[in-house]
Each structure stands twice: as structure tokens, then as C-alpha cells.
Amino acid sequence: MDIKAKTEEILEKVKGDNGFLAKFKENPVKAIEEYTGKDLPDEQIKEIAAGIKSKIVLDKDGDGKIDVLENIGDKVGELGEKLGGLFKKE
Image 1: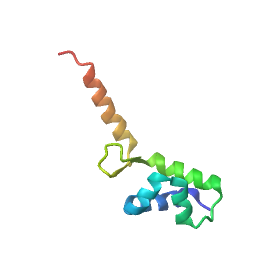
Image 2: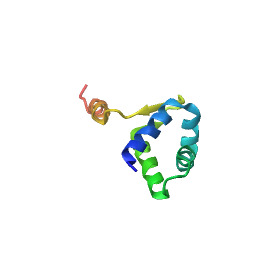
Image 3: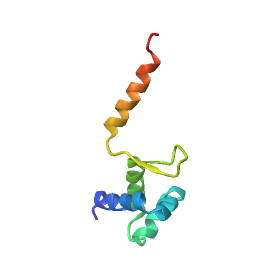
């Protein structure tokens, strides 16, 4: 089984299905087991869940949406700009 391909497949499901997203937020391992039909070993399911979690930020701002970290470099750059503003002399 190609774990990377399965992770991407389930990530698309998380992004496109609010019902599945809710299940994933509540219990990622159980949601993946239901989606895959429990055909995968526990270690692979945990690996897939970790892979998906590493690619999304689950509703940290309370708006009910997920943010997909498509380009982590942009996020780091934005953070650097914000932090740089803290140390400006006025």
C-alpha cells in the first residue's frame, strides 16, 4: 500500500466533506478506519492520521474551516514579518 497516496486521498476527503471533517476532528483514527473499511494495520492508520494532521490546521480560529498548509514557506515568512514588527524602533 502506498501510504503517501492514501494520505493524499483521505486529505482530499477531509477538505471536501464537512461530515468527514467533523469525524476526523473528533477521532482521526476511527474516521480513517471507517473510510478505509479497517483494511489497514493500526500503525499505517496512525501514520496516515499524522500525515493529514501535519498538512492541516483544524479550526484554530473558530470559524469552522480548515486551513491546508499548501506552502509552509509562505506561513513562516508571514510569521517572520509579524515578529520583525515587534522589534521596530518608533
